[in-house]
Amino acid sequence: MNNVLSKNIKKHRELKGYSQEYMAHELKISQPSYAKIENDSTQITVDRLSNISKILDVDIIELLDLNKQTIYNQSFSDYSQNQNFQEIHNLHQENKEIFKELLKAKDEQIELLKEQLALLTKRK
Image (cartoon, rainbow, N blue to C red; front, side, top):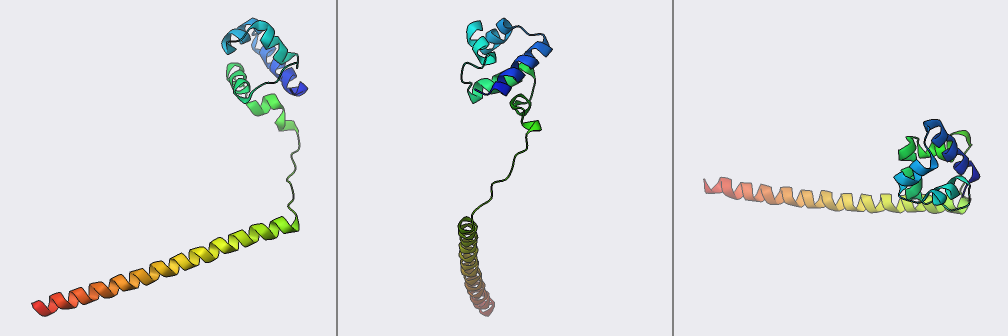
């Protein structure tokens, strides 16, 4: 587990005035099991973390202490950037071809309607 996470869970529990027994009861686990969470001696699941954040009425981000950490973007290699550009270009080309086919079908439909209108006009 993350030592910062376990410390933040304990800090927020104490700020709320909740006991470990109360938290354990709300989480439907034993008090010793809950104590392991705060002692950083067990893994915590995402579901359990979500439940703890709801009980403590605290955002998960705050429990994880992500507000204070700098998160850097990963940079892509030139190959990866070129690959992504090529995929976008291919999608663009496919969309252009589909658009051309749709325009052709529209034009054919218009011609058919014109012919039908001409036939109806001649009948009158």
